Amino acid sequence: MRRRLLPHLPLALVAVATVFPFYVMVVLSVQHGRPLSLPGSLLPIHIDFGAYAEALAGSDMGRWIGNTVAYSGISVVLVLVFASIAAYAFAKKRFFGSKVLFWTFIAMLMVPYHLTLIPQFILISKLGLLDTMTGLIVPTLANAQALFLMRQFIIGIPDELIEAAKIDGAGEVRIFFQIILPQCKPILATLGVFVFLWHWNDFLWPLVATRSPGNYVLTVGLYSLQAKDVSLAVTMAAAVITFLPILLVYLLLQRYFVRGVTMSGMK
Image 1 (cartoon, helix red, strand yellow):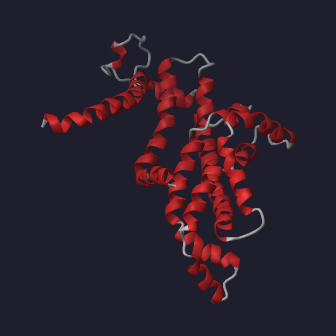
Image 2: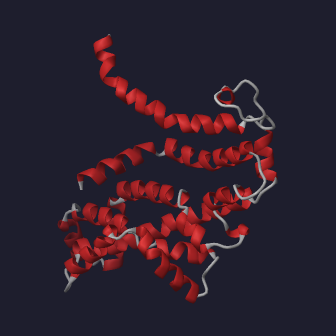
Image 3: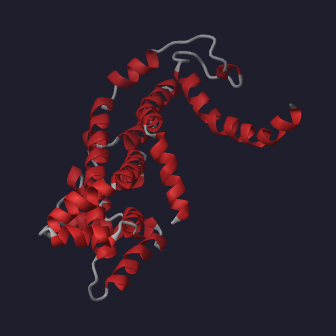
């Protein structure tokens, strides 16, 4: 028995180390009105959910949740639409400079994200989109990783399907919507999960692009609470509220998440 359990011991230690910060976050969130004394405060002896009520009532938490849902949801739809159309063109169409254009776009993955922040901010500011949902979403739509994964998947779709559709008189639009997209359901679901996670947890760009507290997303709103005179329990309660939806999405769609990690490693 010991020989069978011993190889799993390092994984168990890593799992405990990973879960521990979340445990601390939850326990401190139910210690409302009590002084912090470590390590005693890490034992949930006295449970008080008052911090959750204060976090929901004393801030724009509801507005931030709505903004985050809109930011993540709209971005998922638009990124999948643009990535699938571009990937189909790069995978199945032959035009001058297509390979150079594709690999130039993919080279964006090697550019540190922070280098693009200033030009991105200036462009959005000049267009008058600063502190708007449009300005928040538009710069994130050119997703090179999504394009790469979509193209690699579409390449695997047999050309004979497309040729047969053309013989039947189907045009490019019909081929894309009735032949290509139905074949891409697995990769679309996987990418949808990843894009949602990326945008839900996005902090830097929303911090730069928004000014009004009413336009904050959850990550920026949670950061702004630190500048206010709120207790640690309230801050932790807000963090738990922020974390719960993404945990729910992960639990419901974890098979797509695991598949996406596998595909990212194989491509």
